Image 1 (cartoon, rainbow, N blue to C red):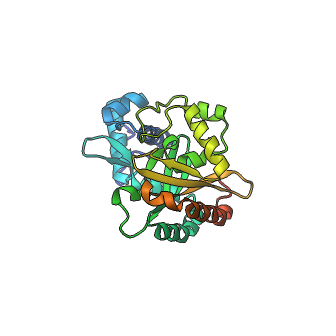
Image 2 (image 1 turned 90 degrees about the horizontal axis):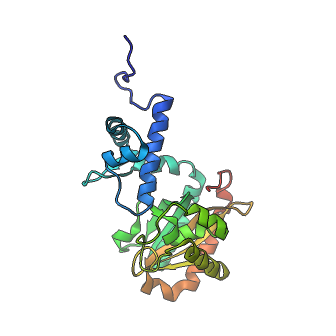
Image 3 (image 1 turned 120 degrees about the vertical axis):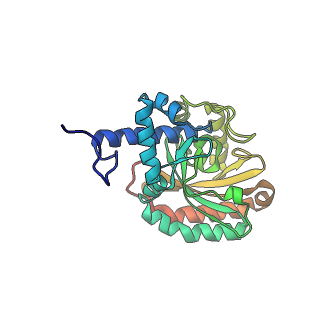
Length: 269
């Protein structure tokens, strides 16, 4: 009699159906993480995906073993470093070229400097550099996922979106209660903030992700003018505000220097 049990040394992700299920599980975890709400445990994840708890348990354990998911102390799940390392490998030229640019900006402004990309409503941090002594809690890990509507990088990545496109993108998401005190609470507020910042040539997100934190960001465009990534500087609002003009100049220069490194990838919807 034959079975579907993996052979020794193999994983449960060896078949096409198992791989599709694993991708569904990871995407569900990512969507929950990006929403800003408490993550799913295995039981709630099984209900969300629509599979038996035993199958969800086996799949998530395999994904945790491989580093694509992490199980926190409260048993909730989040995306793991292996997932983001795989995602980052899709942008090798961008990552390589961005490191010295981000490092220079971080040191020049005594802050953090970031390179981010968008996947739907999520903003994925690909690389982060920080000045010596910069607050540890704001440095960000390369696997950080944040919502697009309450971060400077996220808003920069949406600068070319119309009001209708933003409304569709955020249709199934609850914006109230996510982010800092000045975060957008509706698609209309997000559109208004981007309309204001588009004229200024830089996204200035003050208190949108966290109270007292500012993030300045500009989009990185490919040679065809499409937004592919965003570069940003993040730090204490009181430290960065007096240097806004210099930050804008440095961000624009970094985005221009990265323009030819972002071609060839599909634009996220």
